[in-house]
Length: 148
Image (cartoon, rainbow, N blue to C red; front, side, top):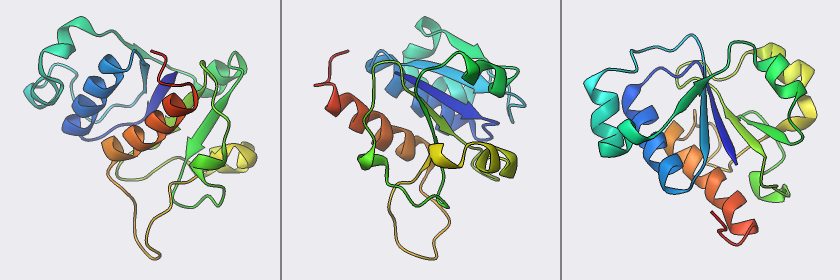
């Protein structure tokens, strides 16, 4: 599977996601602008020693990248379809927005049917990004019998 972070802002979250992706054999992509330096100590601290052995790709044009993908979903607290109602595939891309501003409205308008959500208490902002990635990724991996 693939995890895509759109405009990540908090290095500790990305560090935690690096650990999760490394340990589940999941590819990680970042869509700039990135709100921190990938050499920051907070990023390396949260990802432990996995940072040095893990390759992070950058996507300059997400729309163009998605044209080459068979299966992908955007996660948003504003979506109505739940993440556990999806049939994940080995190459499914899980796309998450920035911790501070989520995903741009233009993506919701263009890919409305590709937006899914993780249920939570009403009138709440959203779950922590690294927790959301873990929840979604492990559901996909569960459906594939955790075949890393």
